[in-house]
Image 1 (cartoon, rainbow, N blue to C red):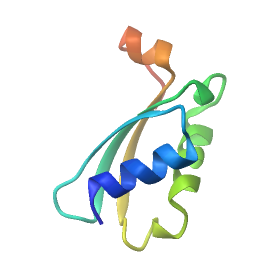
Image 2 (tube, helix red, strand yellow):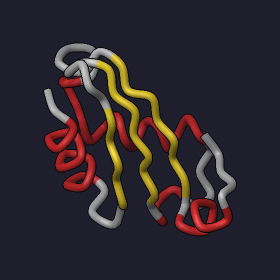
Image 3 (cartoon, rainbow, N blue to C red):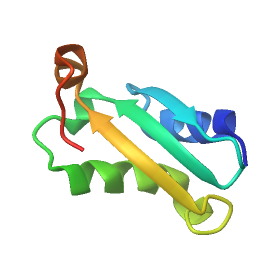
Length: 82
């Protein structure tokens, strides 16, 4: 698995999102996902939205994905929910 594939899958599922994925070992990744779709949602709901874009890859090809999910306003302010 590579960072570009994960980025593409998240953007397909959340087309309004800005996505930055990092990970050098092919199984453990970190992602910053900024989307207006996160407005009014708690961190767990935001994470579930991202995980849903990756489907069966989670726990298989992607062993771990650390997420930082923010709305555009939170990202611009440097604040955020998890």
